[in-house]
Amino acid sequence: MAVKLRLMRMGRKKRPYYRIVAADSRAPRDGRFIENVGTYDPIAQPHTVDYKEDRVLHWLSVGAQPTDTVKSLLRGKGLWLKWTLIKQGADEARIASELQAWQSQKEESLKRLEAKKAQAAKEKAKAAKTAEPEAAAEEAAAPVEAVEDAPAEDSAPKDSAE
Image (tube, rainbow, N blue to C red; front, top):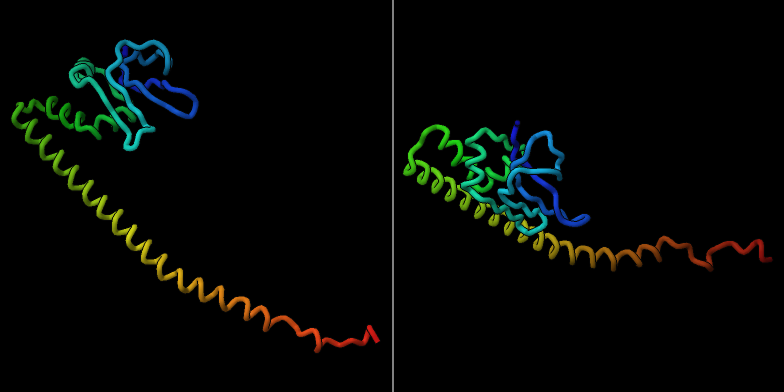
């Protein structure tokens, strides 16, 4: 029996909520499963992933294969790094130091992302302020041009009326 760690869809229409389950690969997506090992909520901002670390590591150790999505969720939480280090035979101290380094690196990247978003918001606000007076000037000039382009009624020939 080939066991997979995969997502099982729950929730209502247009509001998905997933369980991370260990299931036989031949079972349907939302059908029978062996064990529920976690949850994934993509609607929450930011999305939330909760799992039973010891059970996920157990299933990986007995040969369960995660699907691509579950693997990316485990990577996002650092569990896949821990599993890789365990497979390589690393001791607890090395695993803890590697996870600490990974966590600090992730926090730095989040800070850079926030700074980039703040900079983009400042630039957008600045562009809106400079575009606002230009738009007002264009609106003021537009009616004048329309009057100049329109032919005067007095200058039109009145041959048909005579």
